[in-house]
Length: 80
Image (tube, rainbow, N blue to C red; front, side):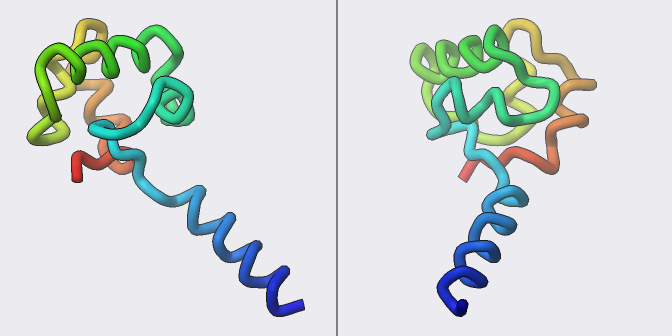
């Protein structure tokens, strides 16, 4: 019973965890509300070409991501 509760707690906490845009793959990035496969691939491609994002606002440098998108996803992403 304790193991089941621990597993359920871990699952719930995982849902609230921010996605690190500096390490996430395309599939993980698509879990962010408002980021589909095309934007997710653009994020990964940009990161490969230019290196790690220094801050969340730097996502605006990715084609197809503007200030409104950054504000919508701010609570769901991190750049650790």
